[in-house]
Image (cartoon, rainbow, N blue to C red; front, side, top):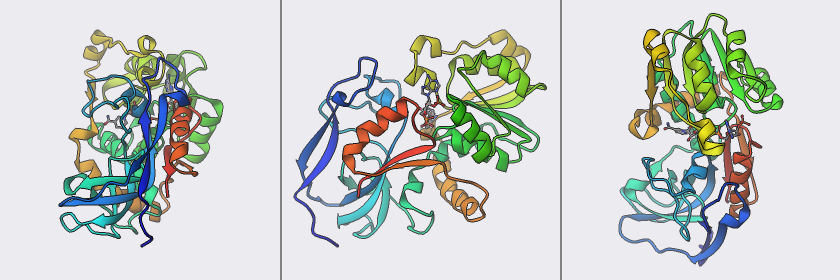
Length: 338
Ligand SMILES: NC(=O)c1ccc[n+]([C@@H]2O[C@H](COP(=O)([O-])OP(=O)(O)OC[C@H]3O[C@@H](n4cnc5c(N)ncnc54)[C@H](OP(=O)(O)O)[C@@H]3O)[C@@H](O)[C@H]2O)c1
């Protein structure tokens, strides 16, 4: 194993955004390489994820099941890397582990903060950072997709949505419809991700698109956006349709008031809708089930992993998040650190 450097680079929050993201809200800091204490390991990060929720964590939010980023402190998020020093509950140098201390080249972690992964379980380390557990939990356990379902996925070209649509098809859905923010993404959904139909949500009322693409209504809605898309899904839902509500991109990344969905309660009652918001934090079984399921589907050629991999090291991470928020990426977005 190569000798360790004396310093590590991390990305800190310089200031909270006032609306638009800019590089000035991030700051690179060089810090002394932390030393391992008892039952701790030092991990050289290979890859870290950037995702939509990180934009929300840059604000002073307190309603999520995890803490917001703090000014002058390093950001955090999913990462994978190799243990280079220390020992913790059988985890030792050479082991590949996932954890939550991304946004830095080296991470010091306790035994309970790392999960050991089998290097050959998935084709490349960054596959372990996919948002597949959320997509799997929502489709298989919350919406319980079954043969014949007509499924609508909002935010379909992003990290969760690009896997969610494929999972719905693999679970037997008869028709899967997706929405995304550009014609290029709409084409991508249909040509490369197996969506049966897709539309650009900027291109006229969402309700018109859904009525045209699902004339007999939808039986499942996997919502990653909220706002107008949620409201249109209620109107086009069949009786007893199941809604797995995972995200609110329109609120997180767009205009907050426009994005906040209103529930048409009487229609929801009349149709006996099952509307179930869910958080991965409370569905830990998905973390156990997903890697095996994902690996098998990849080996069988039944799923593709839509991802954007950004090389160039930790310095590229802030711009990766800025571009993600602007809708310039597809699929899961990771930055290669080493
Ligand atoms: N419930 C859970 O446990 C859980 C777990 C993971 C993620 N989530 C949530 O699930 C949602 C999706 O997460 P993700 O990581 O997969 O995000 P993502 O889709 O990868 O986020 C980036 C995309 O958001 C879209 N976007 C930007 N502004 C938008 C707007 N105003 N309206 C609609 N879409 C907009 C853009 O795509 P377009 O170009 O297509 O607009 C962009 O490419 C987020 O709300 C996230 O917080 C929830």
